[in-house]
Amino acid sequence: GDSVTQMEGPVTLSEEAFLTINCTYTATGYPSLFWYVQYPGEGLQLLLKATKADDKGSNKGFEATYRKETTSFHLEKGSVQVSDSAVYFCALRGRSGSEKLVFGKGTKLTVNP
Amino acid sequence: IAGITQAPTSQILAAGRRMTLRCTQDMRHNAMYWYRQDLGLGLRLIHYSNTAGTTGKGEVPDGYSVSRANTDDFPLTLASAVPSQTSVYFCASSYSTYRDTNTGELFFGEGSRLTVL
Image (cartoon, rainbow over all chains, first blue to last red; front, side, top):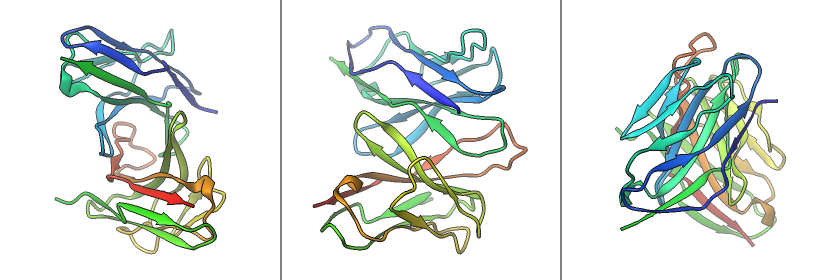
C-alpha cells in the first residue's frame, strides 16, 4: 500500500540556518504530495502541496519539489526562524479514488535564537 | 469562521467507560476523518466518511465507531475505553470529489487529548 517515510527527528537548528527535511514515498501511479505543519498545541495545517511530477510547492519561504524519479518531496527553507519551530508531516494522497491522506511520522524542528 | 470544532479539548476517563468525541464543521465539506496522533507513530487514520450517510474503516479502527447522520457532524465513540486508546485525537475534513485531483487539502480541528486510566 501507499506509504511515506520522512527523516527521523528531532532537528535542532540555529536561527538563519538552512533546513532540509527528507521525505520519500511509495505509491501506485502519481499521487499528490503535501507538507503539513503542526505548531505547539494546535492541529495540523497545510504548508504546501504539489500534484504532479516536477511541480514545486512553496509557502512562507518553504519549498518542496515533486521528484518522480527519486520518489521524493524534500522540504527546504533557506533561513529558518524561531517561529518555524513545529512538527512537520509529509503526506500523500493516492490516485485510486480515495480521499484519504497517508502521513509520515512527523519531524520535530526546534529553532534556537 | 469556526472551521472544525472538537469537544472536549481534554478528558480523563476510567477504563471500561464509554466516551464520545464530538466533531462539527461549518464548511459544508463532503469528507470527514478521525486520526489519532501518538509519539513516534505520527497520525493514523481511524475512520473516515466520504459523504453523509457513509463511513469506512481506516488503519486502526478496532475499538472505535463513527456515524455520519448529516454533513456537519462526525462523532467518534469508544464503546469501552482501554489504556491503549490514550492519545490525541484529531478530526479533519476536506471538500473534494473523487475526480478532483487538485485539492485534497485537509482542515484539522485543534484536537482532543484523551487519557484512559
